[in-house]
Length: 387
Image 1 (cartoon, one colour):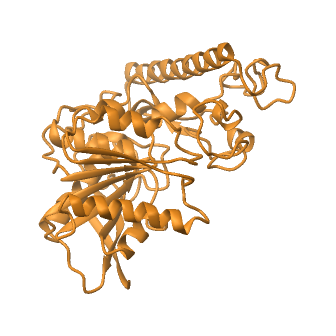
Image 2 (spheres, rainbow, N blue to C red):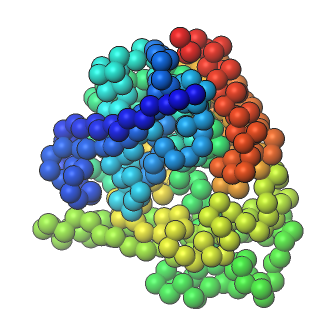
Image 3 (tube, rainbow, N blue to C red):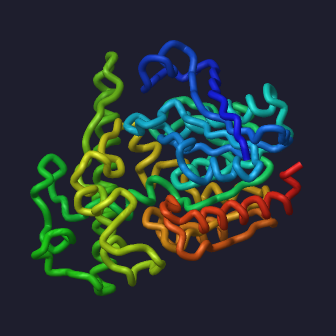
C-alpha cells in the first residue's frame, strides 16, 4: 500500500519554572516537538494510532510502518527529549504526548485515538492514560511543579501494549550491576556478584539463593544511588543561588542474570546476548541504561521508589479496551512483564496474546511482524477502530 509521510510539528507554551532542554524545546518559553505521520493514500480514517517513546523516535522501526501499510493512520511522536534521556522528566513527556493527541483531535479531526505502547513507550502510554482518566499529579518526584491534574489530557479510546516493559525504573532495578562497590571507581567490585568476570564463583545456571542475593544487591545499589541524588538536590537547594541541577554518570548498568541464564523467566530469547548486543560490552559502554543522568531525571524515570510512571500501578487506573502482546523471544523485555500489565489493567475488555518466536525488533522475521500486524488490526476491527 502506498503511504504518505508527513513531518509533524507540535508547539505549546512551556509553563515550568525549570527547564532542562536547551535551544528549541522549552528554554524559550515554548515546547517544540517533532514527529512523523503515516497515512495510507486514498484511505481516510477516523482513528489515529499514536506511538511514542520517552527518549526515542519510532518512525524507522518496523511495527508503526507495517501498521500503516495495513491501512492504519499512524503517528510516531517524538518527545522534547528525543534521543537524549539524560535530563528526561516523565511528567513533561506526558504533557508532550497530550499536545500531540490534542493536535490530532482538534487540527486533524480524528475522532478516536489508539495509544500504542511499544517497548519503552508501554509504561509511558499507561502513565499518560492513567493521568488522562484519573489526573492526580501536580509535581515531579523532585518537587518541581508540573500540573497534570489541570492539564486536561485527552484520554485515548483504546490501548495496545506491545513488547513493552513495566517501567524504566523496573528495568534498571533488574539490570544495574550489584558488584560495584564504589560509584566513583567502577573497577572496585564484589567478585562474588561480578557475573561477567570469568573467575566469578557463581556461574549459570544460578542457584536460587544466589538469584535472591543478586536481586537484593541490585535494589540496594539502586536505592543507595537514589539517596545520593536526593541528598545532592537538597544540598543545592540549601545553598541557594542559581545552581539548580547537576549531571552524573552511573557505571555498569546492564548486568541482568537473565542475559546468561535461560532458566530465569524462561522464554525463547538467545542467551549470551541482549538487545544492546554483547551484555558485558553494554554493561561497560556508553549506551547502558541510566548511564548519564541529571538529578531530577533520575528521580522521575530511574528511581523505582519515586517514579510516577510505574506501569503496573498506572494500569490499575485505566478503563479502555486493552491489548497486551508478548514476544516470546524478546531479548529486551523480560518475559513476565506483559502478563503483569495485562493482569493489573482495570479494563473490563482486555486481551493477552503471545507471538511465538518473535524478537523485540522482528529483525529477519517478516512473517512474525505480519502476524503482529494482523493481530493488532484484527483487534482494532473488533473494537470498531477501523472506520
